[in-house]
Length: 362
Image (cartoon, one colour):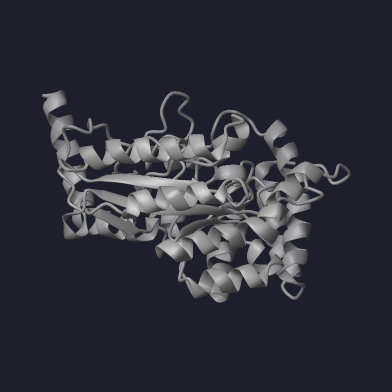
C-alpha cells in the first residue's frame, strides 16, 4: 500500500464513521494506521515526486539529515535585549505532564503494559491532587502538557484544572500513541480534533505542543502554525524564545521547556527529590542573574506520578517557595510567553538574523 492509499483510507474512515463515538473512531483509525502506514513506509520510494519537491523548496527541507532548517543562529549575547513585563528578569512557568498510558497499547494489543499504565494511573489517582495542593498554596497557574483523552477518562481532574484556569498544550491523545508515522492529512485531522475537543471541554484554545511520548513529524511545526498554534516546546535548544521557520506567513516560535529541571530525571537517574530541589534552585540562580541583562525563561516540568509521591511533594513546596520569594519573576504560562514574545521581539530577532546573514554573504 502506498502512502497515498493510506491517506485515502483515512479520509474514507472519516466519511463513513461520522456517527460513531469519538473514542471508537480514534481506536478504529489508530489500529488501521499501524498496518497501513507500516506498509506505506516500506513500499514508498525514496525519490520525491515533482509536487513534493516543489513543496520542499517552499519551506525548510524536511529531508535534511544534519539540521532541520527551522532556526536562525544568533548567540545569546548578540540578540535584541528582552524585557519581560514589569521589567522582570525571568519568565517562570510550570508544566505538569498530564498523561495516560494505555493498558493495551495499539502497537502491541496482546501485551499489557502494566508498569507504564500503573505509573501514570498513580499520578492521576493520587499524585495530581497532592501536586495541586502545593500549586494552590503558592498561587501557581500551570500550562499543562495534556494527553487529550485524559479529559474524558478523568472528568474530576478536568474540572479541577478548569477551576484553576490552567492553559493546555498538546501532548498527544495518549502517551502510548506516537504520531511519527502520520501522513500530512492524518496529522492535519489530528490537530483539528485535538484543538476542537480540548476547547469544548476546557474552554481554552490550544496554542502549543510538547511531543513527549506522542512524538512529532517533519510536518508538525507547519501544521501547528496552519491550525493557529503559536509555539512548540520540544526543541529545548535555548534559554530564550526563538522564531521557528514555518510555511506560510504565520509567526511561530520555540518556548523554552526543560530536560534539566524535569522530575522525570528523578526516576530515570534514580535520584531523590532533595537532589531535584538543589537542581531547581541552582538553575534558577543562574538564569535569574543572567536575566538582569536580558530576560530568560525557566520551566519547571513535573509529572504527578513523580512529584506527587509522598517523599517528593514537600520538595516542590520548598522549590516554589524559593522561586516565588524573589522579586523580578514573572510567573506566567507558555501561552503568555509566546504571545508576549511574538508581539514584542519576534520581528526584532528576524531582522537581526537577516542583517547577520547579509553581512556574512557580503
